[in-house]
Length: 164
Image (cartoon, one colour):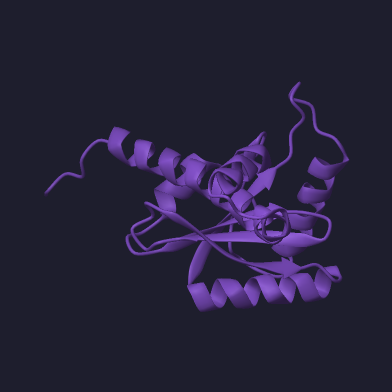
């Protein structure tokens, strides 16, 4: 079950399960994890990228520790809707990860997530040096929060379960 849509994920999630947001960069992987109620995205420490095998191992160790049941990964789509080299690299990363785990991935349009994250960090008066350290996880939080909001709207739109 490598890649699923947000709607497919919503249909399989159970209560009390966390999901993670990922912002895949060339040097780091920004990480954010939801609370068990899936209302809030909280940034975590980034994974410094070394090579795929070590990156995957670190990501799966984090997922195990946080009891993550799905990954929402930012897909860097161009403003015109086309996909460039970064989107292709993200898709290749997910393909390779699917050989190492059964945890599903959901692609999430991440246009402007880094810009939004940087604005928030500036508003919080975070220094330029500290912003550089936090930007990827803050972007992962924006990605994850968008998906959490969509999951909530899907849950609210679903017909109530029948009490047979």
